[in-house]
Length: 375
Image 1 (tube, rainbow, N blue to C red):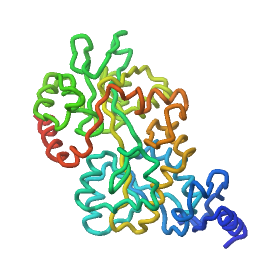
Image 2 (cartoon, helix red, strand yellow; image 1 turned 60 degrees about the horizontal axis):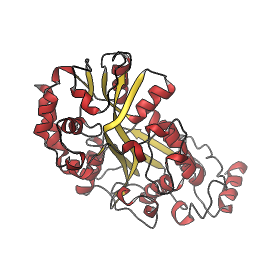
Image 3 (cartoon, helix red, strand yellow; image 1 turned 135 degrees about the vertical axis):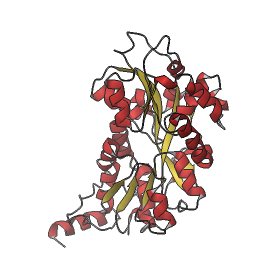
Image 4 (cartoon, rainbow, N blue to C red; image 1 turned 180 degrees about the horizontal axis):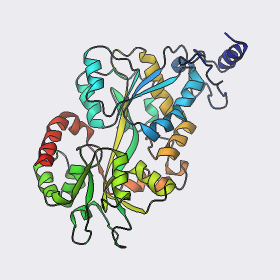
């Protein structure tokens, strides 16, 4: 071990922690931990010492969201433990993860489920390890964010957005205006799949179903409502595509994810308007797969996500995707980010996606929607 690595080892021990200080990729030393950031009273040795392997994680986000994790919470995880974070991006978890898990050949220590429906499907199938609450501080999360086999993270929302140039100064007031083609002409961009962007929920809201009576979904009623504007719908299957369709004017309005809207409006200065009214609130989930190479490393990564307060704030300021940690509120984030965060008054008039419903019904609902789209 080099002199620099020995110094880092001494610094690591000084705050009551120990670990591998040489990253697996190329053998380059991990950054020295900062004792002021990693107070042992906050980051206990019982969770973060003696970890092995690396934070290999199944990434269902990709792009800017993955980069934001790598530059905030996972960067801090590496600095604290010496273990590198290695993402493997795959769109969705219903194929590659399930195939590996069912074959007993899981290479990941942490799984990110992009939707709650996929998470509950995996949990019900016995593919996940139960949370070790001696390692993961679930008491610091809102009770609704804690499940036996994972935690709810990265709260996000699907909002009605519009291109202000395409609507000639008119302003929609809720997702019901997707179905008002007389006052708001033009194509509507809607997500190709049922989860995460409110495709069926907004149709039912517009058809008179109250938000608190949404589930179980009346799928046939939702599809009948979508059929009233079928010729005006352009289906998108990625956040990048949704933004392109709205910015180039192919769609005048549509359902968009809040993080994408934040980037489009605040960073790219695109002429978009939006409303949360009638939108959808949903989230991702973190879990450790059964048979993970290093279960404790996966549990420690979830603990880091909850305990790294500054890393979490920095991540949300980059993406808008907040986790419901008890001591964080809208006021902790940058002023220009707050209107886009799925928290507090922003989500007062939205539907909260029922992840357990989708866990049991996702395949059947997906098939019905796909059949409608193919007609």
